[in-house]
Length: 138
Length: 161
Image 1 (cartoon, rainbow over the protein chains, first blue to last red):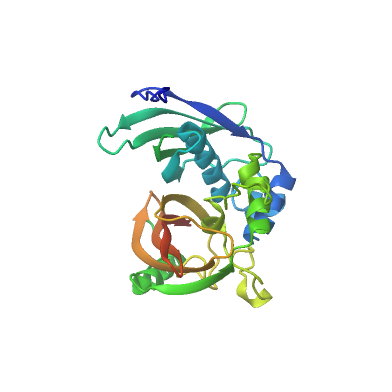
Image 2 (tube, rainbow over the protein chains, first blue to last red):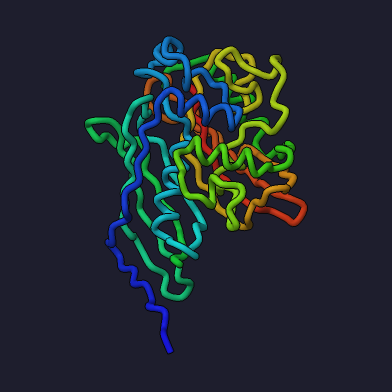
């Protein structure tokens, strides 16, 4: 008889990083499928007139990266119950976005694991979003 | 705080709409659209991008990322900056800058291909933040559901300058 080895999750454990470097084509594709025509995502001149360095990444695309980090941590058979993030600084076209994180808490009764997540962007690694997620590991 | 007549008008309009729930149909979820969304988001997992995969799943962020359902919107529904006139309450017709502030997404059910999705939303808070002219932080609650009940709840924040 074999037993499934129970996965151990501990506070402070690292969340494997996920990353994406969205270019102008990425934003156009993502905007098209979500029907987002806001010019700050496509038009350099307009974005600069708004005080931005250039076209910026959509909030929902940041959310997708946080979700991916959470889902990969939850693993096969796991669930992502919640994902949240706060935008701290705009991320521009061509910026390398990297989401990392750690386990903040583990609820022994429910099995829910809360993750602290952060997304950094560009060569300097500036924080562009801070987030959290609640997952049930598989 | 420095006065800004346009922001004050947005604030007045937004406060007047707090608690007023609106409904919108996002149409029927198509597996192909959800897969396209997943690809555009940089996903490569077959269960998200391959509709023929036995465990194909609608990307959990798909429905909450839709600003409109098919068949989209008429030209008259857009602001000059390309955003929808009614996307951020209180801003229609005003020369303001709009930015997303962040979201909290809570899944209470699973969105499936074929679901007819309805979203309900209501503004719940209007806050003046920052220094100088400052900015408005608008908080909105959204619920996405299908015939079998609520599927996703979202708290979304917009920044208006």
